[in-house]
Length: 357
Image (spheres, rainbow, N blue to C red):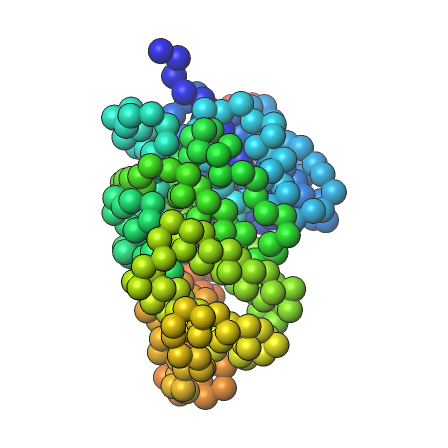
């Protein structure tokens, strides 16, 4: 049988600082039958020019007017020919054997409706310092149990962890271009529901760069992104309840809503009444968590985002302020060492080229 083709699809917007590393990690994949497609979504920096430097390595680079990450992903999929789809954001990295490890497992699966995920670790500048912290989704699960845990524990799987068959991708439908926030959360809920099972491969690794307010997932004070987040949450709750509307599912949905209501109360109070209405409809009690430190965030939110939100909210404690200072100092030195390492690598490459000449 012909070895399956894997399409690595990369949406990019103003990612000049990181896209070269992301593409190198795609090119370095030990799974050799692959194609790499970059959609530059109207970048105003050097992203397009940098990506084109990799065309000799078989990377297809296409430019379009700025329409958002979801539209760029849809465009990439329309151009690809792969039997399997590997999504990769322009600032993240794949371990060299990420795809190969997942394809080894896929060979053992019956049909192409099994969905594969893997481990992901967060880092700021140096991927060697990525922290891999397991959660309740890091195991084999049924689609319903996966969605239930996602909402119940406010968890997520990073976009690049997935390896999705073309059949699943087509059944799930396109990315929702109306969602400026959490478009990946909503999209992969549909992908999960289209699958027959979710398999987790622990040694298939992704490195997830935390880029703060410059990242697509950062919501901050944007009313449009807050509205999109709320719309995505409603859709995900609806997806889960469409297959299971048990008391446990309803309780999980209430917990999911409570985990966000303080955020909306601070950044988008106009949405709070809508959230509370849904909480009541699900049998829960409305209200904003009363704790000034908002400890509920630590259990469910991505740790970096949770800490940023906590520090922004009223009542931030002296402990959290100390955490901010310590983290800023750590990030500063991480950046310094990252620049030094890159400078050394660049110097060795230049010396090598002069020697060859």
